[in-house]
Amino acid sequence: MVVAAQKENPFSQHLQSSGVALLSIETATAKIVGEFPGILLLHHHQPQDLCTDQLALVLQGGWFPAQLHCNHAVAIVDSASRNAKAAAAAHRLPALTCGLSSLDTFTLSSLTADSAVIALRRQICALDGSVTEPFELPVTFGGGVEPFELLSAAAALCLLGEHNPLVRLSRWHIPSLHKNF
Image (cartoon, rainbow, N blue to C red; front, side):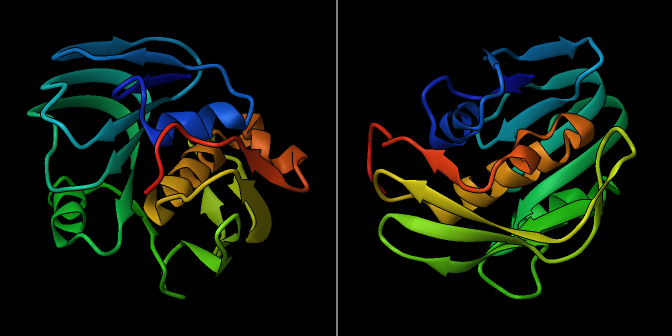
């Protein structure tokens, strides 16, 4: 899996804790080639030009690449961000919402200081065409987590379809992150 994001961020650390291998890139132009989808965390102004076959865009704000060449893309958006939802809609991307509302596609059905339960509220179609049915997954972590970081990581992993590592887990354990939120 290729992730275009800052190397040390909670989103990438959550993905790594699931057991997937990551290649992080920081560039203004990216071409991701291969059979697996790319995941792009957009919260900084990079990349400007992106070319890939399958892509999950994680939108934390309203920023979007100037050029997007993609056969199949899905936006993972923070439901609390009007700008993120507007950016996905403006580019006519299907969106998976992540937030604390029961209306969100991914939400938390419980949250404590060291654990949570992630809930997928409705069936989704992964980038490989497979279907992921609604589920709840307990998560334990060594320190505080930002709900959107956790939910967007789960959404990105679910978009891997047949390669989703979460389907093998009865509990997802995320080691302590370097910084608390």
